[in-house]
Amino acid sequence: MLKSKIQSLERISSSSSVVFKILKSRNIATTTGSSSSNGVPKEKVDCVVIGAGVVGLAVARELTLKGREVLVLESASTFGTGTSSRNSEVIHAGIYYPPNSLKAILCVRGRELLYKYCSEHNIPHNQIGKLIVATGPSEIPKLHNLMNNGIKNGVGGLVMMEGSEATRMEPELRCLKALLSPVSGIVDTHSLMLSLVGEAENHGTTFSYNTTVIGGHIEENRLSLHISETRHLENWNGKFPLQPEMVLIPKLVVNSAGLSAPVLAKRFDGLRSAVIPPAYYARGCYFTLSNTTICPFKHLIYPLPEDGGIGVHVTLDLNGQVKFGPNVEWIDGIDDVSSFLNKFDYSVCTNRAKLFYPEIRKYYPNLKDGSLNPGYAGIRPKLSGPRQSPVDFVIQGEDIHGITGLVNLFGIESPGLTSSMGVAEHIATRFFRC
Image (cartoon, rainbow, N blue to C red; front, top):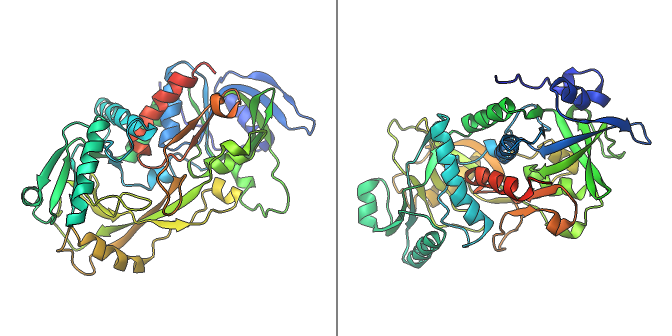
């Protein structure tokens, strides 16, 4: 029987013991707590996943299916409010990433698991395929390199075709050559996350929303987490140090905090700063196609990758809406608490459309003036900055940082959605016995 959702922290009057009350009410295994020297209650638990984005949800589900007692802590009022709800909703094939990298391995494996899960759980999705296009002679060798890279990564069904053949498939498309990836697709991310939450809860995972992990400390080579109600951080002015309302001592911690994962790790007192990679933030805006009753494309259409991203591409959602994006806008980080509360700037400036038109018309020349409307924006949690080579996913365990039971997930940008179930499987396999 599907368990009811956790009561919001802000509805419970005694903030200092709210997580403890939730754990007891849901029969989560704890060791009877004590108080620290400053009176903050302490509780021992089995597993904590920080962050209820699609990766955190997949990890929680996988761990709980393996028999662990899992508590998911999320600073927002519900799941998937950050990067997971602000992306292209594309199921990637695994073409772009260096062979034997985590991105390549987990994208290919995650795609297989994701299609299987969506089919078995009736998650709306569609394997519509993708065309990656070369619009100039200098791009053709790069397209061939992409194909060879995809083959090395184990991506099946790749076909190189002439521009005329691609145009027969997509009459509105103009290119010199195109690489067809038939295993690429789209998925309803919200339905996927809702299903993961339901299955995780049904097998015993506890979700505590409006709950922010503000830091931690190492004690006896294990991480103790400092917990606060989110509402108590809203008006924090930075003039005084953050104080926890509760300390949790888990056997296993998965830092899946997305954009704030490196910021949070820096607040784990006793974790060596040298193992925490620098964080970079790339905002990407999307524009939607208006003034059309007929969708101009049946496949995803992608240009060749650019600095910081994979180009302003055509994405179709399951309702038939056409989206163009994302672009790449490098932005500065924000203060720690604002990061925890996801107070990034997600606005889409209408004037940016003028930068989209020439990029899109390289492969879709019939795009009409005035047909792009502001859509939404997302921010990529990157580990490399402007004009730097892309960096692989970082899944960091005790062998790297020396802390028993701590797993840090850094730089889980694209293909994070596609890789989510692969990441979960990887963590459950490597770190289950922590």
